Length: 106
Image 1 (cartoon, rainbow, N blue to C red):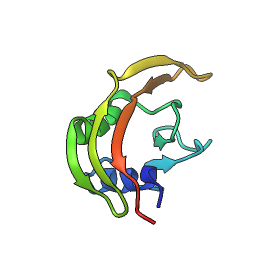
Image 2: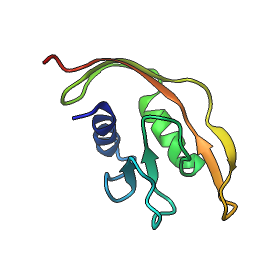
Image 3: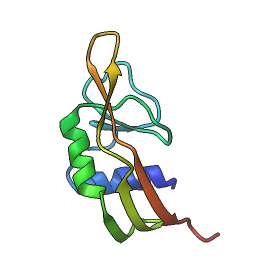
Image 4: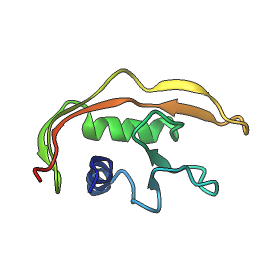
């Protein structure tokens, strides 16, 4: 399982959202307006409050184990950024995080 999927599962366990219902991995669904979208590269993100929940759950978190990865440390690489507005004039915010982890041993 890729790291991003395990981070999504951890956030679900922390009560941030539900994978497939309020949190999505990969492409942004055209029908969802208030979801949390997780991708490996920077991308438009949902509202500020939801990003604060992610930040609270993962910033400066040390030595935790996911199903297939051990994360030594995760932290923000800055503050939640106001990036722009989309075509419907909704705010686009971004939170960039670093994960220092050990990948699964084959």
